[in-house]
Length: 202
Image 1: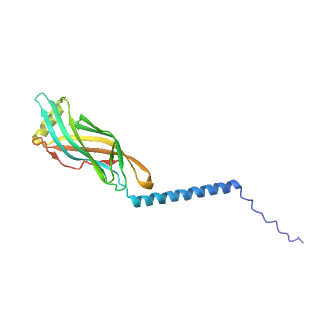
Image 2: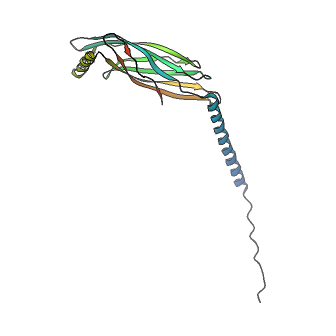
Image 3: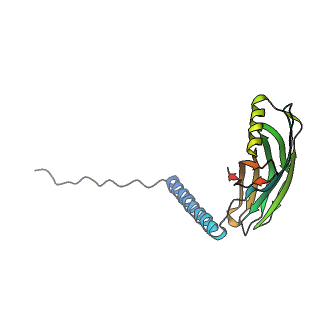
């Protein structure tokens, strides 16, 4: 008859201290990430940050002189506004570089020194872009003739401005505003034909 013997139960090995340490560190990091997310979310609810924008609010075609030899001279006045709708944060802007283009030809560069826009405020820049004498090719001359017949002169405006503002606990936020639109004028009066010309964030 066999004796009734039970094998000795297997005792679990003690957890290595390094595992306890790693578990503790990961737990702390996880809690830190959750807290940071809550802080950012609450900060957004409190400050409701909005991105400052640049836009063309007015313009005028001061000169559009075109002779029979196909040489063009033009001058355009453009009012560019920067709006900061944040009620609790000032905005700092720099590297404003806009290019005025006519039928693929760069007419002028519009630049501005670094500047500040107070909270819930705006700043206007009055640019006057004057071209040199520009010899047009045959295709461009045809385009000008068509514009003159329509009494509608068209320019493209493209460029960027860098913006930064500090929003309470959210810290400093940086981004680039990109502006690209078409400006249209009546040749007969030089009046600007208003249309939406507002930046997008990149």
